[in-house]
Image (cartoon, helix red, strand yellow):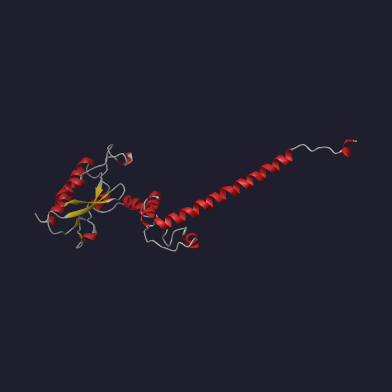
Length: 215
C-alpha cells in the first residue's frame, strides 16, 4: 500500500474508533481537525475538503511526526503504527497528566493550542551569557563579554547546568563575583543591624542623674 494511502487509512480508522468511544458527535471538531492534520514540514502538504491532512512520503517504513496533546512534545512513529498511536488516550497511568485530560486523545498530527502554549513556556529561558539576558550589563562590567545564543532551556537548573558545562571558566568567574557580592552585602547588613541595635539599647538605658540634678 502506498504510504499516502496508509496514512489516510490510519487516520480514518482512528477517527472512527475515537468517535465510537466518545459517542458520535461528541468529539470537539477543532480537536478532530488537529488530530487529522499532517505536519506541513513534511512537504507537499494539502488540505482536502473533508479537512483530512495528506502527508506524502516515500514508503511504508517512513517515519511521521505526531504531537502530545498534553504538552506538545514531538515524537516520530512508523506510518504502520500511526493508527495505533492516534487511538491512544490518557488515563490514571499517566501521572503527569491532570485527571481532566483522562480519556482524551494522547496524540495529534499537529500541535493543539494547549501543546503550543506548553512548548512556548518550555522554550523561554536563555543562557546567562545570552546577549538579551537580564545579567548582560552586569557581566559586561565584570569583563565577561562572551555571548551564547542558547535560548530554549526549560528550567533554571538547565540554565545553570548548561553554563557550568559549556562555559566553565566564565561561569566560575561570575559565581565568584556573585558570591563575593553576596558576602559583602551580608556584612553590610550585619553592620547596619549592629548599629541599629546599639542605638536602641542606648535609647532604652536609664539616664544617670548628675549631682546637680540630685539636689
